[in-house]
Length: 441
Image (cartoon, rainbow, N blue to C red; front, side, top):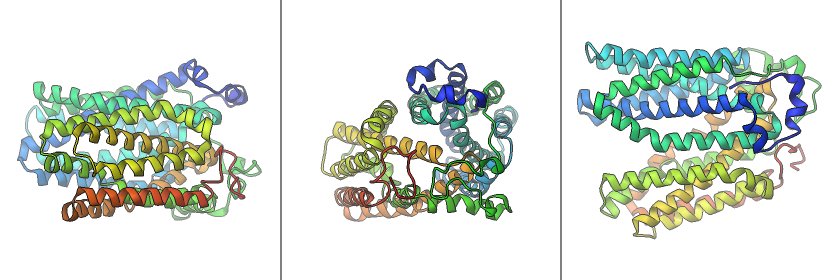
């Protein structure tokens, strides 16, 4: 996660494309480290619930650990952007990796002598806080590694690496946990953080311009890149600067609002699919796993297709188009009684959300000044995900009360309506994203 010599910026960004990225050893190292880290994360996602289940046999205890971790991530997200914009980003990435290595490494070491459950409750939420710090900082350094002209391609590669890790990691983690216990699987995750921390030291990071240096630069948003006083004030003012940038940008403002609505509608969709396959279609856990695994193929497909779609259709058309397709696929989920078709539709939905997600993240990285990117990222994630838990509760309750068919038809129709509404905003009027200005072009 890092950058390179600023004197070479023009030369590197003038030759965008997959060949130029793969030829860059700095980028290859970064991609390898992130793929390894994602693989480690998939180990902990399996190992932590198994640790609690083996120790207590209680699904409620598993949920409590998950809830505490989620709460820690949300709280950290409120100030993570301020931290990422204030400190040296390389050091922050290394610090978060080392912290998670130590925290997760403590569990298998202690588990050799005893199995105190309080240690899991203490370690996992703190690790979740460091994970949020890492994620926000990671977004800020991608442009520093690849240059503005290649952000979308880099994000598609990274997204693909995460998809592969998410598909294969849980299976490997299950094998390790079965053979050596879940604590050993958590130890492997700790080892990947150690490798990542060392590797990041060798990734070149382009220096982040200071707020003073950002003044006078040609603007990419409505404010022309000008640094406002609150961007350099206290923590509260600095946090609000990220939200203000989102609100004043002609594309990011509607994007944030519409994604909040889409998150409300789709956050609980995985739970609905699991419920439908098990109770609606009468299949077992192995079939559920196969359906969800098939869905990851859609995520992987998005990483290959997003760059081509963006170049041919532009940001607005591709973002709106995939959400129209996603809404249609969600509506069709409740109309089919075939498990293979459910798997295909789930893959289509994940393909669409993957394309849209890579596009929107790349756009934020392209149009946001580097010194603001951490705060803008924190604000965006906080605002667009705030309605997710409530949406999950509402959609799953609707599926239980009125049936999966009615819930999916309603959610699908609403997703289509939200996507169509984007045509009347700055999203529908922009093609390249980077050229978005106050006039919405």
